[in-house]
Amino acid sequence: MKHKWSLLTIVIFLMVVGCDVRNYGTATQDGPLIEESNLNLLTTPTEPNNSGQIGETKEQVSDISAIINKLLDVNHRYSALEGKIVITFEATGEKELVELVIEEPSRFYVKHIFDSKTPGRFEESINDGTNVQIKGPDAKILQLTPANNGTLLPIGGVNELLNPGMFIYDAINSGQTTLKGGEKFLDRDSTVIVINRKEGKLGNKLTIWFDNQAGIILKIVSLDGDKPLQTIAFDQIKFTDKANEEKFKDMEFKNNNTN
Image 1 (cartoon, rainbow, N blue to C red):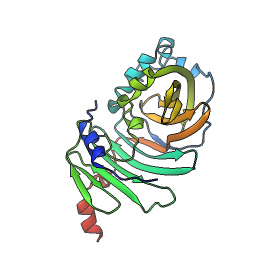
Image 2 (image 1 turned 45 degrees about the vertical axis):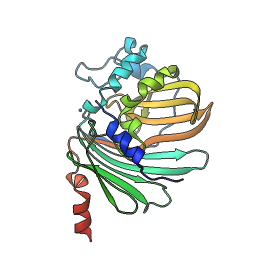
Image 3 (image 1 turned 135 degrees about the vertical axis):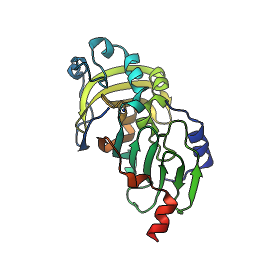
Image 4 (image 1 turned 180 degrees about the vertical axis):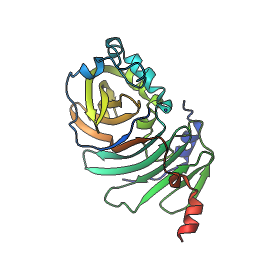
C-alpha cells in the first residue's frame, strides 16, 4: 500500500463545510456481523429525554429519511470521543489503524498508522481549535487553517464514520436501501442498513452500522455480492465529557520538549 497526504487531500479538507450524546463507557469489538430482522430494538419507544435514539417509533423505522435527519446532526450529539478504527482490506488481510480523540465542536487529534505490521510509520494531525497541524512520516509539520467543520479530519480516511452527513444521503439514494434491524456493536445499540447499488470500485453493496445515540457510523463493510472487500470499523470507542488536553498540544512544542 502506498499512502501519503497530498495537496489534493488538503484542498478537499479546506473545501468541505460541515454542520453533543453523552454516553459513557469503553468497549472492544467482539460481536457478530449482523442479525437478520431483529426489529424490536428499533420499534421500542424510548424515554422522552433520550433524543439521541434512532428509530424511536415504528413510523421512523419505516422512513429512512428520519434516520438521515438524525445523522445530519451528529456533531451536536456528543461532547468528546476517543477510539481506535481498523481499516481492513479483506483480499490481502492488510490493516491500517486510526487512533483518534474528538472534542466537539472544533478539536481533534488523529494518528494514522499506514500498516498495522509497522506501527512506527505513521502520520498524525491535531486541531487545537485555532490551527491544524499535520506531521508526516518524515516529521515535517504542515500548518493549516481549520475547516468550518472543526472535527473534519485531514488524514486517516475515516470521515464517513465521524461525519456521516458528508456522504449518507448520496449513498442511500445510490441504490436500494433495506433496513435490517437492530444489533449490539461494541456494547452499543446500533441500526443496520444495507444499500444495494451499482457496481463501483468497492463492490455493489454496503452494510452500515449506525450508533443509535451518537449518530456516528460504527462500521461500514463494502461487498461485492456477499464477498467482503473492505471493512472500516471502530475497534474501541469511548464517549466522555472532556478530552485529554495533552492530545491537542502544538506539535512543534511537543517536538522541542521531547528532544
